[in-house]
Length: 294
Image (cartoon, rainbow, N blue to C red; front, side, top):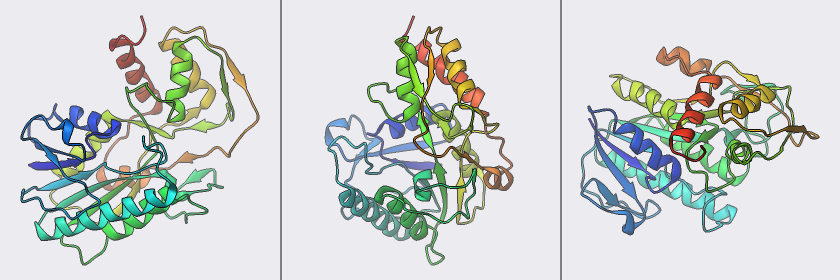
């Protein structure tokens, strides 16, 4: 199967490519908007905010590319929204014109905006979403239109644990860095259950399941770790695994705590999502293996 992955110059996109290379039944093509990153004929340059003039044939697209509030150039919110929507519209035209069968879109939990419920389900209506979240929500609607010739699976994902520790986002990366440096960890909602996290390995394993299915339908799914645990237990687990002397300090809550329901996804694809414990363990093990710490 020939699969095109967008946003391969981004942190998540790059790690998705590296993880996908472990599967030998895919012919991967990487799409980037940075010409300097092109090293071979498997890497293709295309600015997705402009008309796509590619002549390649692919069976499926994994859409990771996005402008977001953490983008390097400090894009303003309106630019984030317009750029993401332009990418979506240009991709839809390419998909329809080139008879691509499947689109897997990495959306975001940010579509929900202000979350007041204890558990988040797909039918919760967005409330006061930022423009990044709105761009993801609108893109979902466009990808899932019935008159498209392709089928789309939109995955609303939370924070992704990557191995790029050069930044302080998402929050879990910031906490991990403090733990690695034996610093105090100031956090809130410590006794509330938490599962708002994934790693790239889990994302790629699910995408592999979706790509292997002969038939899919246009649908939107929450996708987050299973078996929520208290936030304090998660931090303590990381402290133990990384052999840190960090101390946890409780502070006043900044926002409401919630957990994400992925039951719809698990049932539709008969897929057992990894527990938050499992994800934390394998990520900490990988961090140690990469010699970030002794």
